[in-house]
Length: 198
Image 1 (cartoon, rainbow, N blue to C red):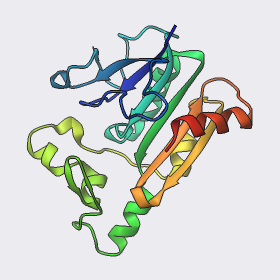
Image 2 (image 1 turned 90 degrees about the horizontal axis):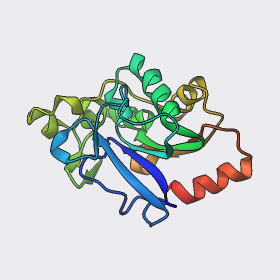
Image 3 (image 1 turned 120 degrees about the horizontal axis):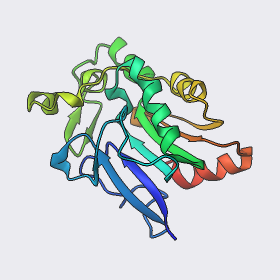
């Protein structure tokens, strides 16, 4: 039987192209705040009450934890833990504020750092939210907090996740982390990282 992956903040993306989840071993449940992207379940990171306790094998979260206020992050991580099975895990990526701030220090606030499918991305977009999305009225896309790798790992540890493995990709201005709900060996965490992290 396929395992269940909860794709939180999915937008229009599906599991196709998501490393480790892009095959028949995984059933995707798309979860988003925006009904326009046609998720399977509508909800927020801080209220996932439409997802049953202990029903999910893995959570994939790409660039949405930064849309929360800092005090909401622990609430979201408690929701992650609640819906995960005892041996479940989280794969998460978020902007690397440390690298972005280095660009700001070099007076590159408005200079594009890279081009995404949504267009050029400058430090101001990473710090505060993608300006074209905000201009279109999608204010839920505003960024309300930020993370270095140390801070991101710290909030998962504080939430009670047992093992955390990941790192920074300065060239891509992002952080990646896999966090296990249950204890795992170093070799097991390395294997998860090799399967699911870029």
